[in-house]
Length: 247
Ligand SMILES: [Zn+2]
Image (cartoon, rainbow, N blue to C red):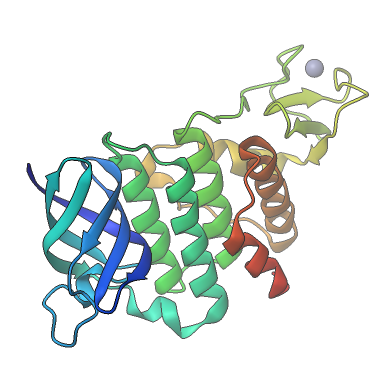
């Protein structure tokens, strides 16, 4: 079976002396694992277009359960992501999020669009790194079945007050009067709550269009990351490395 699609290389491994195994987040088939014969040979036509973080148009052949890349042409290589270790690590973390949260053998247009846009903002240095990270984490959670309920207090339906609380274990919001006493809770001020609602509920073309003061961004990052780690129960290697860089 022949398949032509576009996708982002989210993982690469060397195989043997000259081959490469890749994981691709494709538009049409979600996560695909594929083999690229000869990709590490000098002058191989698919060498740069099947490297990590490259967004390419790809022609794949599937025989039994194995995909092989026959041809790949680069659309965007995101070269500038490699100029800074923190930016590169966040980019790799975005890839690791896709690897763990995007579907396999199913359309993944929304995931691909989110990942590509976040890589774009990182590479152009247009938004604070922590904001791009938090947007990607929370929006991808919402896409992949971990959407928190941020509409109102889970008990009394109060929409907003100075003292609202987020329960990261259950993804629920509470007001001061209704908050459970035996749960781990984050206090969320109105600015942070507005940002979280925006990330979860806004149309995609407005997703990155908001600003948030530094102090609130710090709180937003903390809450979103905690929510992701608690919900997925996954240990993200790139996130650990990011923390080792004191981020
Ligand atoms: Zn309430």
